[in-house]
Image (tube, rainbow, N blue to C red):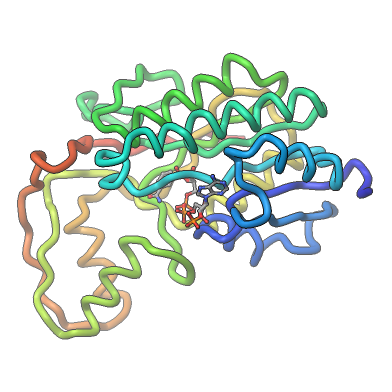
Length: 262
Ligand SMILES: NC(=O)c1ccc[n+]([C@@H]2O[C@H](COP(=O)([O-])OP(=O)(O)OC[C@H]3O[C@@H](n4cnc5c(N)ncnc54)[C@H](OP(=O)(O)O)[C@@H]3O)[C@@H](O)[C@H]2O)c1
């Protein structure tokens, strides 16, 4: 059994989980345990209990989530099972083992009507099923975890891992075609490396428990972001601005997060 310096990461094959692996393995004075869904499914209480028994983690970083916004709208019960029930399971088992829970949440808990960057205690009002499940998950952690942090981030992307806007635009750019991108939604694109480093800062400095915002510094639309991506990768593609289609799934028109200093 590992000593009390271990950090267990769930959902370790997602873009944030993989970034944490790259930046943290054998690092920062902690023993890192990275568990993919196949080894630890947060819906399965017994799997969590077995992992906690084996590793005795001091911290649990929950990178596991159902993150597909469109699929969440079509299959809300599945999103609920993972983003709410799974988070309840983790919270309970963290409490039972005196483990500090760091749970990741999203700008999509907000409705976008504020028109200024959101701060930690702004009122949530999710517009879609994904946002609602993430809101319920974080609310449970805040109300029930003996020691828990919520790290809210927004428009998360990794240049190296996973399925995200940055890599999608690069793929499309490589075809040489024009790319149509929504111009009426604004946010703060956030590199997973920034969030990984922020999480490490939390486990090292142990600030007060509560909600923390970690997002990119620049506010932009998806259209602006696409232009930035093609430019920084020297692609010549023309980006065509389009209006969002709120008939499919509603998204906040303005959800930048104001960063929390720690
Ligand atoms: N992506 C964004 O734009 C964004 C923005 C703001 C906040 N966030 C939040 O940031 C966190 C990390 O997101 P991400 O972008 O890294 O997501 P991601 O790339 O979709 O990774 C999520 C990981 O969780 C795994 N997973 C799904 N269900 C699971 C379960 N029941 N038990 C264990 N693992 C499970 C997934 O495995 P499978 O792929 O095999 O299902 C995947 O490896 C999430 O909490 C997300 O809500 C994301």
